Amino acid sequence: MPELPEVETVRVGLDKWVVGRTIAAVEISHPRSIRRHIAGARDFAQLVTGRTVTGTRRRGKFLWLPLDSGDAIIGHLGMSGQLLVQPMAAPDEKHLHIRFDFTDKGLQLRFVDQRTFGGLAVSIGGAELPKEIAHIAKDPLEESFVDKEFLAALRKKRTAVKRALLDQKLISGVGNIYADEALWRARIRGDRASDEISRPAAQRLLNHVKDVLREAIVEGGTSFDALYVNVNGESGYFDRGLNAYGLEGEPCSRCGTPIKRSAFMNRSSFFCPRCQR
DNA sequence: CCTCATTCCTGCGGGC
DNA sequence: TGCCCGCAGGAATGAG
Image (cartoon, rainbow, N blue to C red):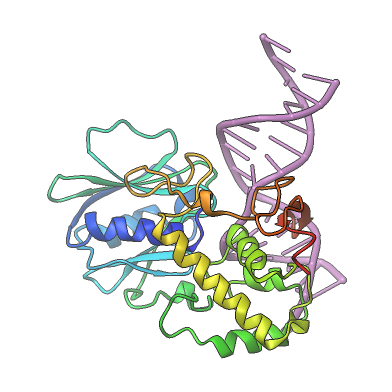
């Protein structure tokens, strides 16, 4: 499930394989995958054909490819989206929705997405920062991320602390897995009121968020199945480093108490009932 | 403005 | 064996 570390792993792959190359053609076989590009498939193709990819950028779970036109191809992987770099002769993936060919007739870029929650769009003038993601907060691994602003926002909110971690307008890049992991490390229960967390505890939680994201990037992300892969179709290994997520009934690695699972925000939360208060 | 539930989607696995 | 149903969940949307 692509959260910040998984998207970063994909970005690094794209940086290696796609930057500097010129798009020769784009084939869109599933309109839902470009639903955020309001002007439609033909407009999308027109804007990217003949353009050269000049870099790769990411904020939170969004990534974008600046083009030499000043526009950018912006992408979100959703639940199951993959950006794969494949030989032209490789057979079509079952859920292949968008294919980019390059003028050098080398490896193709393919957007594959089983559940179609993800998608691509062209952001006009978005090379530096697409306006489509301007409403998203900076992610905690950006140098310009300001801890104090997040801590203040946490205090101002009247909601559960896990909900705040998942709120991309407060802090971007954190999804269900890393939220549970950071809360476990900080020994805080996710349903605690965000404005009742002490300032030192909130700072510790933020530090754990940063740590767990960084550690997962080193491992190439977390995956439980073939749905999250890097641009070469390979899975990450961070699932070995998890202490809470998906471990219902397993002994907490700190205190041995079985990890509990509960429904929260229409999804599962995993936590240690003893050492998370 | 703020908070929160709902909706989108498909493959898989459990239960009967 | 086969079918049905629940589950996985990021972000946009709209209700209250």
